[in-house]
Length: 418
Image (cartoon, rainbow, N blue to C red; front, top):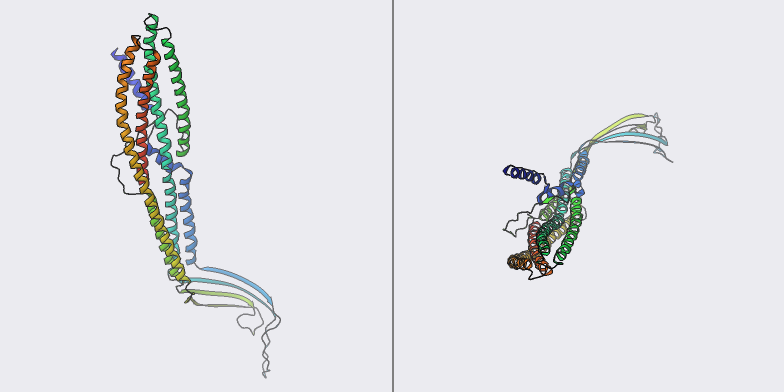
């Protein structure tokens, strides 16, 4: 006998260890990894690398080629005759091909400022993706705890079914020996069929819930999976740690980078250039023949007056920064209101749970008495089923309130940003 017990315990341990489990934290990780939106992080990085590469090409020599052939109605000529010399006017048909090389020497930091704007833009857009992914947590919470509640209800139904089956055997024995009415077992059998229907309905709901959760986290989950009840700390802090707050700060830094870029736009720019050409005429306009030629030098550009365009652009950016501050203020206010509402909900459900425990203890005493009365033929099977159902509903209410409390606490932590 002892050997059989050991074998059974061994087989049970194998079954438990082989059962697939899933935690809420694992669901969060899977969403961040598998949800299609997560791909945008890598796409944004690749795009930013290309944008920076394009900006940095402005530091490299710029090579231009041009060619043209023209015919003009008149050309420059000398209206006087110089004795002993003959000056031919240029041809009316002229040809020119040039290759020019321009090298930026100094731009006042404009290119670097442009690069900083692109980098700030990347951080902002990536943080926006992170914010969008974070907002999926509430959906994960909803489907996760919905399945957890169905899982608990299923366990309670099976417990009710087992208890009813045990009572049915006792009642059938009483009917057989004439101690109970002949129809006493029929009421219990009908109730068992009803419970079987409820179990089947729960299984369908579990299937629908788990399929939705599977789509959300990008991983196939079977209905036999065991979802772990998360352990929520009783310390409910009110300090916000949401990624949206980081996004607001990054948006401000992006505006500051744009302000620096505007300041650099009017900086002096020094460019070195060299041009080589071949044409008719060349640089000597009085020589009507094809010639090669070149020129080299430095060129300075400096926009010293822009009709206050830069000043107006800075004012516009300042308004954008105030707009971000306003968004942050609104977000903080709404989030604080939501947290206060959830704190009130936590207190309410906690009080329900204490009442549920008292009700269950009373229902257990009533059911125990009803069970004894049923066996002695004092009450009918219908009266017993009523008391059994009352106990099940009380236990179901307690289970529901416990899951609801976990959900509200989890949503509280999610809204807070922890």
